[in-house]
Image 1 (cartoon, helix red, strand yellow):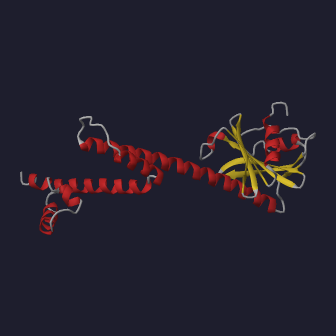
Image 2 (tube, rainbow, N blue to C red):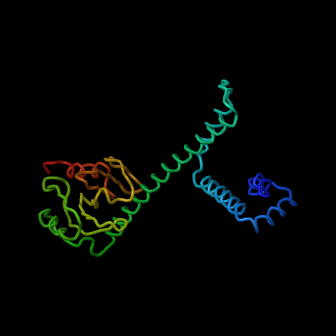
Image 3 (cartoon, rainbow, N blue to C red):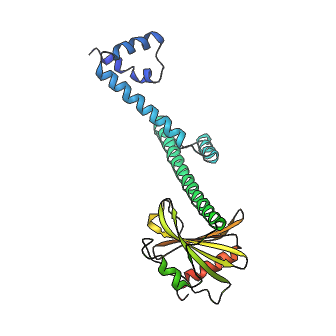
Length: 251
């Protein structure tokens, strides 16, 4: 029974709300009471976890504004206690914060992935030996990859187009082995990266049209369980045209 009076003060102790004399008395008590010490530790850890989660999942200013506007509006009385309504609002805020943070991380992961592919393209173009197999014949380039990467892929026929195949090389994305094909269109170079769809570190939209990012154009699409990325300093129209050749079943 001696602990009963202390148990009612554990929450205030963890929140640092006890008077100094009671704080000291409680600290002395937990040195000899394992039950109260464990209870205080568990509550302190829970409080710390909530604080960490609060810093990690931060609601956007727009979301906070919406919640504040809803709270400030007069609401019909439903007979619920105020603490129930407050808890529901806080839960909604937390769920919304988690959702916003999750979507933000997904966007950041996508940006990092495209940035890495652009860096690889630039590095390849700056290399004295940009490709490991040099050939304009797709029937030479495609077999070269057999046994070097854990998947097979098809290459389009570009003989009657504005594009020409320069060659290919094995590349890696987050330690995932893949293929990098180099194409030329007029004075520009385009890298087409191919990786297994299910091995990528982030889920992407099935097809995304060509977009301009800084001085490079990029496009991605999913086909036959593989993920394709086209990256180059060519126009978005050229990137889209090359992607169309890859997507065409009769190419």
